Amino acid sequence: MKEVIIGGVGKYIPSKKVTNNHLSEIVDTNDEWIFSRTGIKSRYISTGEDTSYMAAMACEKAIKEAKTSALDIDLIVLATCTPDMFTPSTACIVQSIIGAKNAVAFDISAACSGFIFALDLAKSLMKMHNYKHALVVGAENLSKFIDWQDRSTCVLFGDGAGAVVLSRSESSGLGNSFCKSDGDKWSCITIEGSDIDSPFVDSKTIRESKLKMNGNEVFKFATSTIVKSINKMLEENNLSLEDIDYIVPHQANIRIIEYAAKKLKLPIEKFYTNIHEHGNTSAASIPMALSDMYEEGLLKEGNKIILVGFGAGLTYGATIINWSI
Ligand code: COA
Image 1 (tube, rainbow, N blue to C red):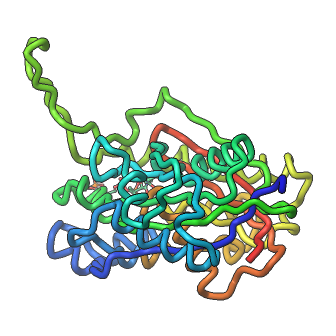
Image 2 (cartoon, rainbow, N blue to C red; image 1 turned 60 degrees about the horizontal axis):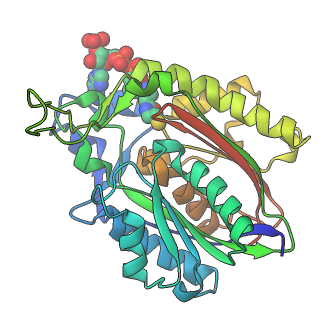
């Protein structure tokens, strides 16, 4: 079997829903500002669930939907910028929770583009090593790295996880994809990590452990790359926008998506959005959106869908899929 399809999809969201009004009790903000600038009304915040736990719950759901078993999983690629620990990888902890004893498991770090990068990598590895089933996961616990005093960032993000099972097939599900990085702009979004306090370093280096972002710079980058990425996918596949059933963009800001719709002269309904409910869940946003679309019955076999991601790094990428379940 030469090709790779999505055989199952699942998501997990924490039970704690935090509305814009809740946030206005923590920082100087209000529902009107947040909704008009971002399209966000609420987000779900971990009350102790780790990234690994949320990822594992999403994986179990996806495995069930794919009618396979954890023991049949050969590969777990988990995209996150908020792992449980520096080491081991969150993917290894997920492997243990779900009992995927036969898999090789590791994390990748490409922030909000992570799921696109992970899909691309998993597809290639499956073909190279003849793996039958793989889990590709996007999972984030951003709330633990948010500066809850910084109103310009704390209103934007949410927690959650989404996962897909990839399976080998004769028919083509995952089409071509591309991944790009612009490392010169690495400082636009950072979570620096822990301080460096070593006897071999003259003075202690203080690192900023909370998320910092140049919102305006990222906004400009996102609006240009989303349009560029969709056009690239169309060109490479010899397709026009009429051939595409849905575009599933990274859910960062509704204004970024509205900009893309206007620029491409597409009705906004062609873009699936759930940002009003979840906020920006970074690497989890695209698989969570796919899971919601599946649960809402929007996805029909044969649908052509473009997934497009962009985020810290700066990174961006896209892929095209023929829906198959
Ligand atoms: N509530 C109320 N006021 C707020 C606020 C909040 N939560 N956050 C910022 N403000 C204020 C600012 O302090 C500023 O006030 P000032 O004019 O008195 O200085 C004013 O609102 C405008 O701030 P600005 O940063 O210019 O707002 P903006 O319209 O550019 O929107 C973002 C800010 C963050 C929403 C926008 O830049 C953005 O979405 N960027 C992309 C971020 C993103 O998607 N990142 C992830 C990519 S993967």
